[in-house]
Structure formats: C-alpha cells, structure tokens
Image (cartoon, rainbow, N blue to C red; front, side, top):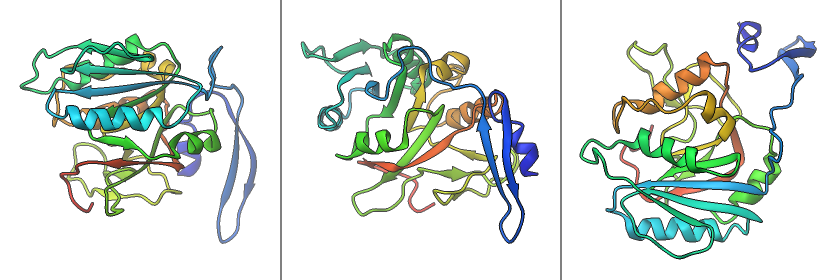
Length: 248
C-alpha cells in the first residue's frame, strides 16, 4: 500500500533504500527540485482574509508578522479593512457576497496579487508565534504545501493536522494525526495554509464554494489528485484567537 502511495508524489522519484524489519523504512529521493527561480526562504507573502468584524485581531496578526524580522515580506489584507500607508502592506477591498463568506475568492485574489513564491494564507484569527520564521528556516524551503502547529491559549491543538479517516463522501471519522504521521485522507484546515505560489497556480480554491461548505476538503482533494502532498512542519507554531470545534 505504501508503494502505491509513493506513486502519488509529485515528480520523478526513486527509492534509495527499502529496509524491512519490525519497522519497514523506505527512503525516497525526488529527482527534480521544486524551487522556482528567485525562490527564497527569506521572501514571504502573508495573506489575511477578513470581513471587517475583527480589526483588532487583524492588528495583532500584522504585529506578529512584523516580529518575525523576515528580510523580504509583504502583508496583503483582503476583505473589509482599511487603507494604510505602511511599508510592506497592501489592502484589497472585497466584500462581494460577504453574507455567504466568499473566502475562496478572497484567497485567490491574495495569491494572484502576491509577489513572492512563499505564501502564508490565514483567516483573521491566526497569530504567528514569535519563533514561527525560525521554525520555517529550520524546516527548509523545499515544500509544496505545509501546515504547522496551531494551538489555543491553553495549548489545545486546534485542527492543525487532521484526517477524515475515510474516503470523501463516507461518514467521516475525523481525528488528529500525530505530527510525524501522514494519511491519504488527511487534510489541512482552512484557517492556515503555507504553500508555494506555483502550487496555487496549479490548484486554486474552488470559488463555487463558500465558508462552511467544506472548501478546505475540496482543495485538499484537488491537491491529492494533482500529486501535491501536504506535509507538516513541527518547528513552527501559531495561536488561534478562537476555535469553534473543541477537542477533535
């Protein structure tokens, strides 16, 4: 089964070693690097989507990004916010169908407008921990799609690495995955995505879907079908200012 899943990995891959014992360990090597020209771990676009009801939280998010001391970055807020004459800041005013929560459109607008390859797209409740960028540098720049640790103020894990447990369409058995684990029915919750712009160009958010219509499940399935495999970065963490699902 594992070898069948390996076939899903994007691009030419070879098996370096296959050790069998109490634990079967397969070491893989991807033949083609995924980095685009001028891609750098020191260049980031942060996208925040909002409907204008949490401006104080958005300010906290912006301050948490500034504290990272990233050499080259930009912050793009899309939705209902305010114009600000501020370095590294852009505002995309968009409130169409806000009663439905057209978050897929907002995320696509941010990615389209971004000038850097590394994207971090967040809802207006995710605040970066102070060492988030240090953790990204430790993980490295070779990734396609990532999640990272998301916790609340009490340290509770808040949907940072999840699996449906079954094929889409069947009665889900949703549960948290261990950070070192992976599952083909796993998905990344819609509140935070770390991804490459080249990945977004290949698979965009489905704008037929709105907030609370499983747009995140659809995106994750689209990635899987395009052989884009989400991974997890255990070295970076964020705090969510609200979490409506409780313990998963």
